[in-house]
Length: 246
Image 1 (cartoon, rainbow, N blue to C red):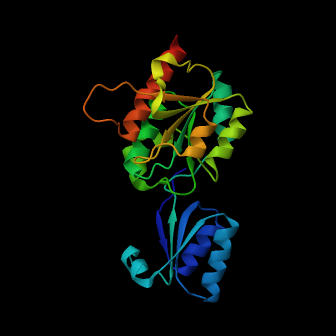
Image 2: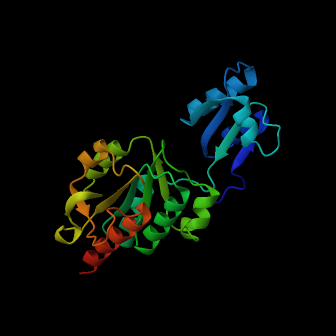
Image 3: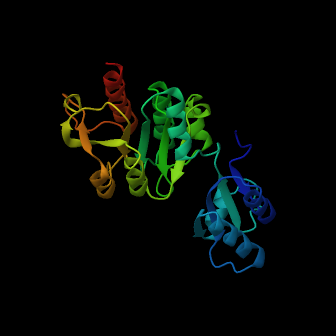
């Protein structure tokens, strides 16, 4: 189901958004504000485990589209988030081993949208993103996905490493992209698998990489030493597809 809005401004509007069950990605609050209604909104945000950023009035004024933010601006997801269990259920219903994308800190919404598009075309059952330091399901992501967001579930989790551990208990193996890894063609990427793609600049974080069972590298013959995150995701995803078709 698609949400009608992405930016929500004003105390009543933001409070009603929380109470109506809208998925709020991030709440921006006037720094130092002790006003009762604003504190009520902050409590609602904490109850829903929403990221809260306290910021200066000048910054809120810049973000505001109406000039009447009243000290609070909320960013709502353009689409609803799914649950990881929904993805595993979808794989089971199709009679397929689970194939998931896990994105470790993808901050560029264009990259996120492109990866969701690739995940859909590669037959993945879902995409998992972390709650912090990562792009959410904005309108830009939806547009870049070229419609794939309507069909590919995306889940947001608090701790990616813990999610990997939980999925390992359900039988999944995990491979992450890293230039120091084994050539992807030499790895067995069949069966229930999670493909982990790292941040555009730093790659997969150490804690997440240590949770992975395999580290895969993409062969490169050019003069530079790295691929765009969405391109790397596509190359590795289709090696997984190739092996699953054998």
